[in-house]
Image (cartoon, rainbow, N blue to C red; front, side):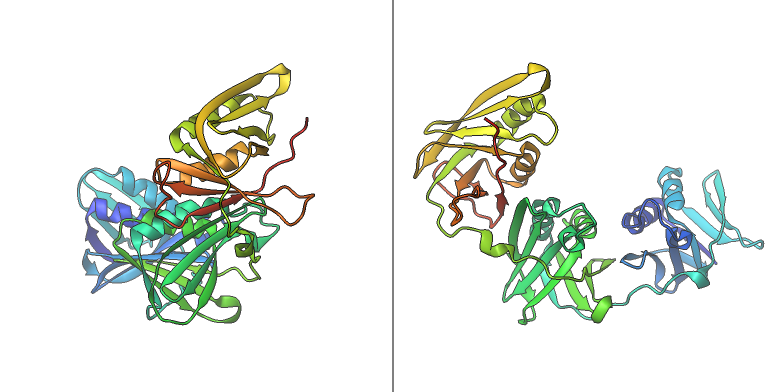
Length: 380
């Protein structure tokens, strides 16, 4: 095999396909990137049995063929090569020669025949606006659990209904939800996608215009595919029943506070500096302000107030995990944020707060982002 390719195009393609590979893979063969050179140019692929990435780029192919080479090493090399065309060729001894300007590397070839077959997905189930989808993933994905003990909570639930696609994630302590437009087949569908894979899709495809989504497979090998331009990412779906968290969101939202988002973020960051790890931050919402109080080890204390507008109820005092709140505030893409105090049928249980966007003091946000956070018990 022998081909020439633009350095920047090749470096970006290799970087794309290796992003989804685990840093440490128990099977060395899965650390490879499959490069196929033919009439259509170059196709680069990576696969770890759960997620795959594939892209096709233009190249001048002198001798078609297929090679498998260590992905992260090739990515590191390609990103540091001089600004000149890259030539890659298989040498007589089986080594892979990478030449660019005066730089030359020889890499070991990995056995192509041992590499697993990459999932093939045909057809398109629906299309979503890339920017909306990327933003929605960023607003929801962080709320998924990072604890593999409960696999269903490590995913983001995608729910198709009519012309709407919902993204939902939870780790038991909070729930994040966002809707985006869906243009596709009318049947309702659900897919529980690993949050890590979906996050990479959002980062990579967020400015692609539109993203084609396809559902494929059956049984234990159900997969979902995301395609934008010349790039495709597939993911094996997580099996299991996602908890019915939608019913937790309140219908009545008359008792709430509106605060400037940036001011609240900065105040929470400052006051939380004295808190012990995982300790809640005390919030007191009054008619014209929200006051944060924190007590930490070594008798450290902090307090700060931020202007707020309280509507529809009396003063509220509660404890919130500052990091969980900061992640929600970072996901609010508006100047102001609304913090709604919900009610519970269980008098012995603290009611969650609902965080949503707010365009101005009096105008609710235009997006569908909702974030439900469970308060913490405050020690008197």
